[in-house]
Length: 450
Image 1 (cartoon, rainbow, N blue to C red):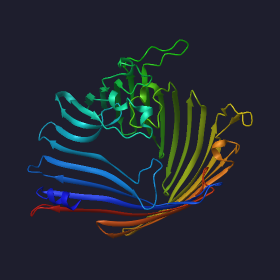
Image 2 (image 1 turned 45 degrees about the vertical axis):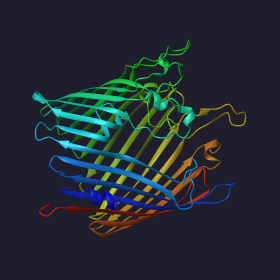
Image 3 (image 1 turned 60 degrees about the vertical axis):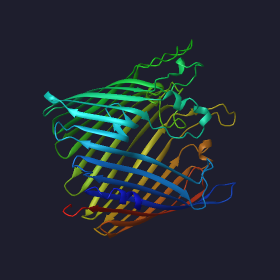
Image 4 (image 1 turned 30 degrees about the horizontal axis):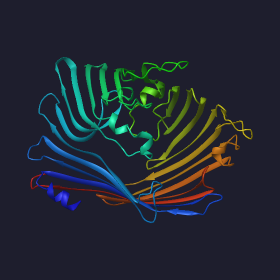
């Protein structure tokens, strides 16, 4: 790190920031030996500005982890990634900007991580245009053989967005995304899983008054998929709907509502986490919900919420409950909440347990205290499951966790903190965890700089 910072010292300003964490937790699983894990993780970022000109800057951020006696399930003892690392040039006019390297970008359709080039600029009449291109960042899957065509299909990614901003009203956008040029059906030996995407999106953000905020997007699936097998429903051409509205009412009331609908077959195609999302899943998701909040003049806030979700493969789930938040003093915050989750019984092929449910009740309480030098918090959560015969619970109906944290600002550029936790999970009868954390930031500037 020192050599890298020294190499950038010719820049007018260099800022280095990071977080170092050392963890230890002990897990007691019935039927197995008690195990202790001690991983250490380092997050590090560097920002260098005014590199020969006020318009050019360099930004780097990544992480690395190594074991202190702990071996990952995948067999390695160390790992790490460069999250982003790019040069950024900002022009003096039209809010124009060019990036080159590894960067993250969201152009209305979703979050992408790219090794390549991006550019944007404002146009006349409230219009703006942006575009990016390069190779998608691919992470190592846990099972390389299960996604052997992953990197071959996703060989190139390109996206663009055209937007129009209306004064005192909001913004409208149209976007296009092409991820991969070798669809599974076009390979020499056609494959059942397609990691490529071809999508067009329309997004909107309206704020006609300070009391109304409406935003959302619709993503259309333009990809040419293999023919649907006989007897199966053809996947929808709509990859996603996601809309949220927030309305502020008199008397310190606010109401927020959300509706989302996703076609997993198209929405998660080309994900960077193939081990988490099934690429060949034709499942559909629909969810809607609302919450109402009320803030009293006496530093009291009450929130009630409701959420219903439906997934074709798992059925329906309904969650409802509320929270109370109270600020009795300037530096102290506390609160508690309770929720009920009603879940459809999952049907399984097992004569001993023909079905099971994840229906449960949850309660939580927390407290936070902070000054310029000291921060402290405590958080406790408990869940009571209705069906303890659920094989995922290992016969345990009550699960809980308590976490306490304490931090101290040693100097303006250094803060140290620690967490202690204890609880019972579905896998571990007893689990104790500890975390030590150091957060730091320092900078260098030439004479005359800030």
